[in-house]
Image (cartoon, rainbow, N blue to C red; front, side, top):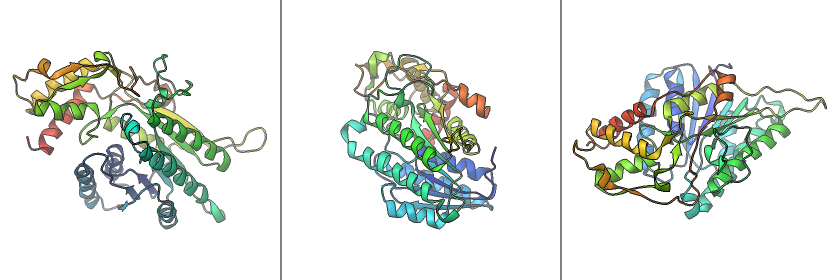
Length: 359
């Protein structure tokens, strides 16, 4: 593993769910490093939640004497800002987690996905490329977020990074597959060590309100009816946030090796991993556990009539019936496998929800 000590690390999407937790994980190691966070703080969901995460980061950073934390409010699509950030901070590692997320929202607002996921990612790749100009050491490793959505309606499970993923069923999935293709091309052309990470249904405290577990909780608390798609026959590989972050941290320290092929030209220093729990849960079972943990935490009353507040509905456009990660490559190369049980993760979420919303 390549130590992160004394590195300059740029993390985009630093106020987002995964980004903020990664920053806090790195700060908590208390190793000397400089972390530069970038986020546009858009209002896709409640900005107060992003500000809360940044406050938690600031609180940790104040106690970590050897960690320098700086935050930049800005957009990936702003090429001048990205170039300036690279010129000023000269990052050794870049972790690109900034993206417009959400399958259904990509149907309603496709422009946001083109700006952030395509143009924004292109700006990052170009900045990485030019970080080597004039003999500079440049970026040692680019790590970027892909998604389990790229697997589309693949019928073979569990999903392997060796599977063909040429049939996306949403614009969001198409942009993430495009990221993988662009990163591979830049890795080959400019010898940029790059690793893509396909995340599987990330959940946990202070997560994204547009995710099912968070949205279900909001609706149940209000007495609204929750809709369970595909008549409850969907399965999701729920992966707890701490497991995701530990996977990202290990990947950061393991850049793909630079080496030449038989033709004397560089082979693409490129890797791709699934990060998932490898244990898909039926949605009906999932909401049953969620309800039990919300009652346990005191978010819902003991006598809550769950059956009166659920409705089974057809599949939505862009959704897939199952997600299921094959993490054998992650286990083989990094000796790591996510392991947090769903009930334990939802218990932590329920406790956070009660405290955050002062229920």
